[in-house]
Length: 271
Image (cartoon, rainbow, N blue to C red; front, side, top):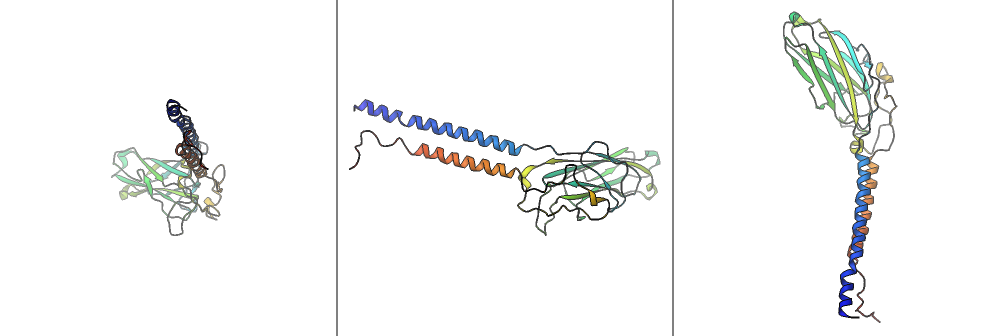
């Protein structure tokens, strides 16, 4: 075999293997990217109709049930505590927005401060990730707006943790700072709660046996419109499958890249 032929074999031999390996890696990235895209895409959160209740409760036990996506209204007096209760399932991050229409400025004596609080099924006050939980209204203001975005609801948590868990969530709206002369004046409150699905990023390996819904009061029958999830499935399984597939294909591609073209033709076989 001539030197030119040996040189051509050495130059051309590894090329098909490298191309095949690159094609395999490209296919792995496309398949893995597709799975990760499916896992990362948020699914729409089921919600109720836009028509909601027209009154609010005055305590935890008498809180008015409300579904996600509904707008609740209530006519009340300044100084009243207004309560609603809504269901939140695991993997949801809820945002509650409230708007209060204040009395005419000519009949008010001072500014006022309003507050929006959210409690879970154990009546533990839940902190807001962001939003205007407390807002001050000037003496001549006509409305005041508040909002609270909760942490994502987890399917399970340690006993010592204060993580939000699936179940009933109470929303309380009230005025916290007001002149004594302004108590009892009529106000109108509007409240709406919505939730987005955050997927398996906040899923836990454990899960509650039942949602945290009180056994008595108006919250005893609160449940999502499509029922509680109560399942082990989450899109974390898609992330795991995509990672395993990418690792397997990367290993195959790496092997094909590093194994070489085999024994050169000029080297005689050993005895």
